[in-house]
Length: 269
Image 1 (tube, rainbow, N blue to C red):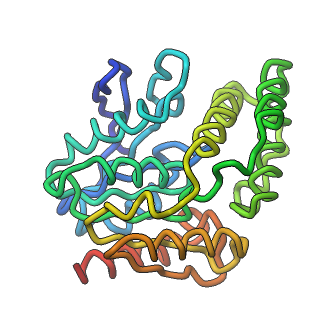
Image 2: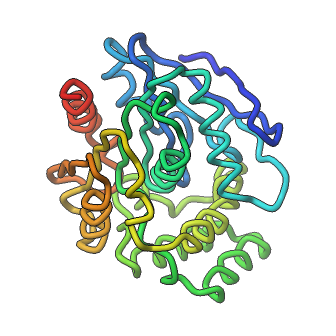
């Protein structure tokens, strides 16, 4: 069991993280309905060569939630605060919404801050595809005390825009909502709102000037694959790695495969 440590974000919110291993630092940022535990199987496989910082994004795990309203900029600051602890030249690793955060941070960070970037199916190309009424419906489900409906609707919306199919652990959400589940579910509308508000053109990431690895599941939707291939094409030093027979959650379903791709990329830098 890893020990939880804390850092203060720019707005004062307490952000939790855990460390595994020793060596070149990697800061891992999980996606929706996850926590710092999401990347632990991969981190353990990388721990003999890397010190992996597993972040609890605000509102999850042992991190505080901060004040309303939620802002994407605050979550970017959260990751940056852990990046400061990891040290100059760390690799950023982000999945799904966490991948969006790392992409946004990489456009702001200096060369000294980030040595490389790995994103696994980040939420890109969503802008304008989810309506305000659909977002209001998500919030109504939460207000009515049925978070499981909010999560199910969010999966349908993301499926409809070709971003993600509910596979692996995501397909097992038909459970009686626990307090922990309710806390996670409350963050779903704000995440979808945040990515829906971003400009969909991947050229906005063309200024990223560090090596980038884009991970894509072979069984992920065709639109998700196209979005990520367009992202890689827009970044000067980016490559795509296809995760065979995997979808959106290979870091939990096939951690050995994901760790091998990350290790191969970082060794080749």
